[in-house]
Length: 230
Image (cartoon, rainbow, N blue to C red; front, side, top):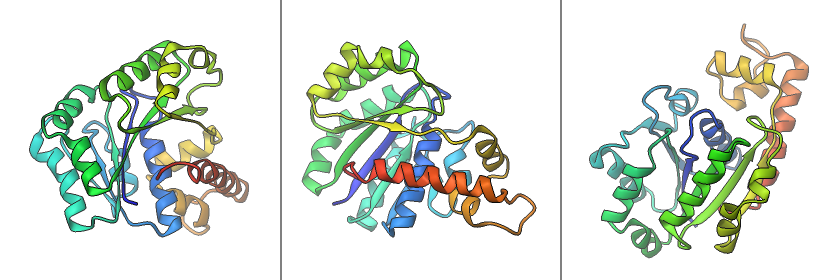
């Protein structure tokens, strides 16, 4: 079944683009067709790292956002990844509401996944509650505790926001942390995760243990993703 995956969290710096990149690499490694869209005009990191699969789109333009749905006309069986920039929830919700897109996706047989990527702060928890209030029980929610951006998610576990999300069937997952130095090197060289694991020759190649860490990290991420409706 095709899916559309809105990778959000509304806050900056919680790891939305990293999550989008890992999901993209997961689809590539599993041989699953997908198209990516990057709404972050400041960094375009998803498009930068996976330029063969992703393209920029303007979230404050209906014409731009309409390109996301048009991707399914070209290939209705594919998956779509939308890397949402910070503070894009309002225009996105308006676009979805005015075109009754959740109903359209249901008619097309497309699974809708809202990924809420979190650090361990209070505002990330509050924003989860707002997300569920906005869309209700129609889409799937994937709550991502990103251990690359936090280590203690006790605020989430005891929150009313999580109770609301779980009441509508949310999937709560943990995204493991990749060693900081390895992630910095990957980001500095605009390297895909595939290249990070397999490149041994170029000047920006990781060392053997760094490559093994990335390979193990991807494996752990993939085990988590395999249990999700993607």
